[in-house]
Amino acid sequence: MNRDGVYRYHNRNPPDDLTTRDHRLELIKKGDVRDAQRNIVGFEELKFMMLKIKKCFLENKVLYTSHAKTEMRDEEFGNIFEIEVCDAIEDGEIIENYSDDKPYPSVLIYGKSSKGKPLHVVCAYSDEDDIAIVVTVYQPNPKMWIDYRRRKK
Image (cartoon, rainbow, N blue to C red; front, side, top):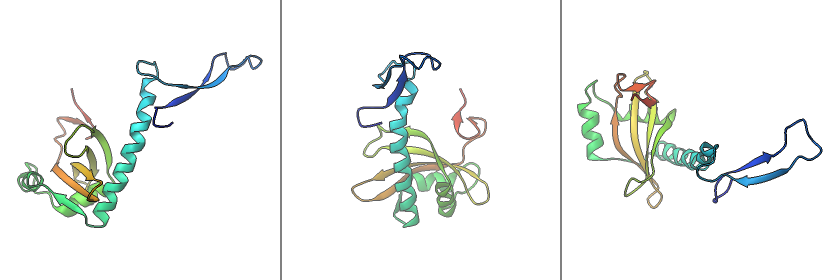
């Protein structure tokens, strides 16, 4: 795996035919039947972004947008407090990636408060300022989500 994409180890002959096996690395290209492997590169970048977001929460370098504050105050299932957002981020996982968001790419994080309340946090990270930006927070409606991780169609 490198910046060009994901490479796979390819064997052209059946595993039981060791005499003429062709071993090589080949670049997985768009449209390849294993195209999903291309997402590994994105996965590593998202994992790193999540680590930076968690670090910001630990160091109290978090900015809540006014929209996030309003959503937390007016949440239909009850108020959401900053400590609950921190808990959700601490053990959270990225479930959606919004890499085209401006001015910073953002992610949707699913996590739970210490009391088990499921939360979705849309969060961005600014490399320039080394700060996490909470765009919005809400308690996901179970009628719209499968295990709070996948949207129902």
